[in-house]
Image (cartoon, rainbow, N blue to C red; front, top):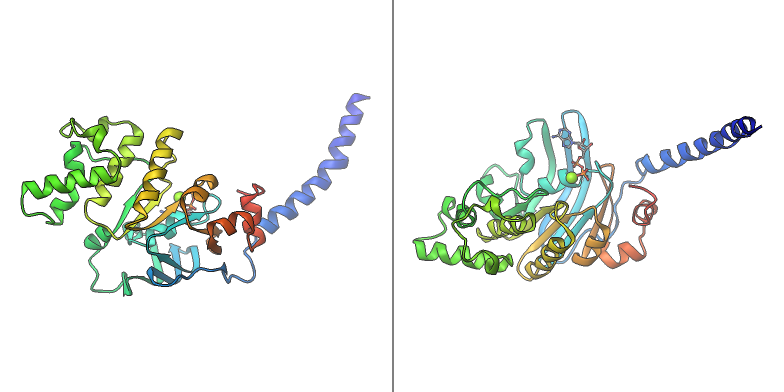
Length: 295
Ligand SMILES: Nc1ncnc2c1ncn2[C@@H]1O[C@H](COP(=O)(O)OP(=O)(O)OP(=O)(O)O)[C@@H](O)[C@H]1O
Ligand SMILES: [Mg+2]
């Protein structure tokens, strides 16, 4: 009897559930017919402007006609399910995708009105102006001091040792790491804890006086205490820089950002003030994602 009952359950309900699930799956994975981004992708006095950006890996399109601005003294959070193109899009902002041979970027990305894909642009100074912090802390196998001094040295930003010392110190102070490392500057950066290493990488990015800082899941390898420290730091850095952060943690997006952009399958679905995106999203897909129905 028990076997019969379970067979009945197997047959009567799962078929219906599978249909519903398949329908739900198809709906969630279907590209919106109208790809126009909902909300407010543009800001007054943008630091960076992206217009109709397409990105391809070989034949495969990973980003579809994305247009968005990055504002000064703002944190823009980019959220969305895994594989939706957040990192790909972030890397367009400092031409990091140039390092992927199959990758092709089309459309226009400007920094202060200058096309960063223009023929006259040298990517080395560009990447100093638009710095990047990666998911996994990646200090160079050098001392703490040399990690921070590396950028100013290769870009020839200082005239003498005193100036370099000064930059190293102010960068470490801004990154909230100075007090912890001031007595061990000659020790290897790799000997620091994960959270300290990530702040060291932030100090290294800051040392070349960037204008925009890109962060790709900067806290995903950190514990809650180190995460809180980096989040505080992001809030402080906002006073001086334009910041774009990719995060999977929606709480983090709501804590650190002023604007949030929701990506889905390479489309920029919605952009708006962070509070609005998380409390009153304008697109069904955004709502499904932030309420945990998808992703
Ligand atoms: N180097 C690459 N070569 C080919 N395809 C790639 C490459 N990098 C990313 N892709 C593809 O581009 C799409 C977007 O990937 P991307 O890494 O930008 O997503 P993501 O939103 O950052 O995901 P996650 O949240 O998992 O980090 C995916 O389909 C991915 O498979
Ligand atoms: Mg990613």
